[in-house]
Image 1: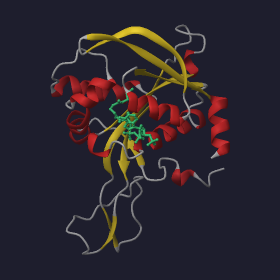
Image 2: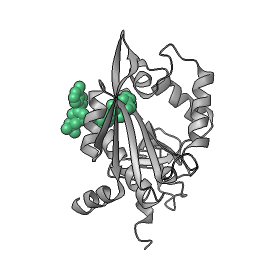
Image 3: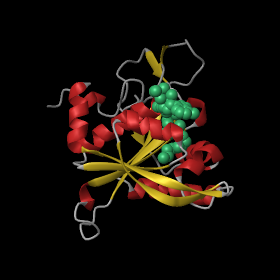
Image 4: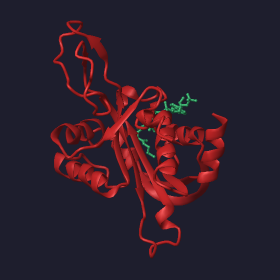
Length: 225
Ligand SMILES: CC(C)(COP(=O)(O)OP(=O)(O)OC[C@H]1O[C@@H](n2cnc3c(N)ncnc32)[C@H](O)[C@@H]1OP(=O)(O)O)[C@@H](O)C(=O)NCCC(=O)NCCS
């Protein structure tokens, strides 16, 4: 049962680590998501205006405190032999295990985005609420369009159903966010419905599209791949 655990926080090209309430992670979220209009504008429905660090940091902390899963999507650390690169030796493996090979040096994994899974755990809010998760994802601009959104989306779904006992995972998207719409369809989400005129964007009202994937649908996809 435990023979795949060493790969649990990894996918083919990516590793996933907990988002932390520290300067590095808060700065990453600010510099690559909150303070980048092309990313931030598509991930929240707050008033679209220039952002400052303080609310961005609070938002980072809220993701950590309030979500079942709040991870940074990272490119794995690069392994190099002693003297190969002018970089300080790092004591940690990407999965936070101390390296047992003194000949090797490792850089830290490089954050390229985040993925979160929130859930409504209070049964009084919704009969099935505590089994329903909602995904949120952002890939920093330099790494967009390379399939990392799809790869991390599949990994997060796997985690949601396999480890968090979710029954359904949902996802809401603006109707004009073509890249996200394509990405989620490819990951296996089904369109549930359209909320008309829910977002005021660039001088006009637009629809929001709701997507979901059920546990059984995910299982069928996992068996195929
Ligand atoms: C949406 C997002 C997470 C997708 O991640 P990504 O790594 O860029 O996307 P991927 O490369 O995995 O997949 C995108 C798919 O859309 C396609 N695509 C890319 N640009 C496109 C465009 N302009 N029009 C239509 N399809 C497009 C890609 O070709 C790819 O499909 P393919 O595998 O068939 O080639 C990322 O672009 C992002 O963070 N955007 C800003 C924030 C955001 O929108 N978050 C989602 C909120 S709902």
